Image 1 (cartoon, rainbow, N blue to C red):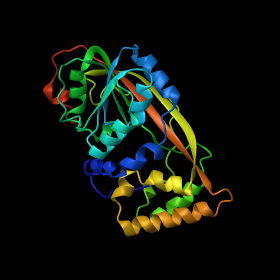
Image 2: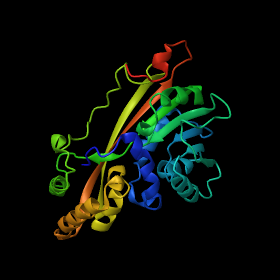
Image 3: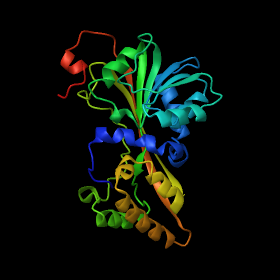
Length: 284
């Protein structure tokens, strides 16, 4: 619903401002996603994992509780501190305050899995694939997954009303409303995807689930989105007042938001000589 306000790369740092509420406001990924990830990537109990952009540990906690050894990278200092608190007692996890681009591994080919939960798109495309390749063991996997607003058939109609509030403040995405429903197919990426020289796409799985929100919990959720964080205070106040009014008009004072997540798993290819312009993730 948020229009283009600043460049995507400039928004990456805004999440650190939401460090205290991010863990509680954002939804958990479905257990079935983790089960599929472990099964499809062939992870053993002693597997070593590298997480790119752990935030406050939203996915880290669930995987750490399954016993994996994890190095989790997070560029935001406040988010990294929150992750350490949320992972207290999980002695198999190390949180490092750094970007994936700047991180220097102690050894190459060390990890069974590199994964990124709703953070991969923030990483420099000229770095991410080649660096993930070098961090993985020869038979290692890369897993990328996310959590986006889903609009399945029968989605809560209050979001149509919300769109009018966004339009009133100049933030309506008029060309893509309503958004398309979540895809139900599990097609693998075509062979020309970024990183195809270094990775083979193994599997795609999609998940849709719903969560109920009060006005307060929904506003807290919005305050973890980069576009809302970057929005001017006056505009944000107007937006939230309109949203609260619409939710308050409902008999139970709640709304249902659907979430859609796509898990894509890639297998590291055997090391071969490749065209450097492709290996470095340059646009085709």
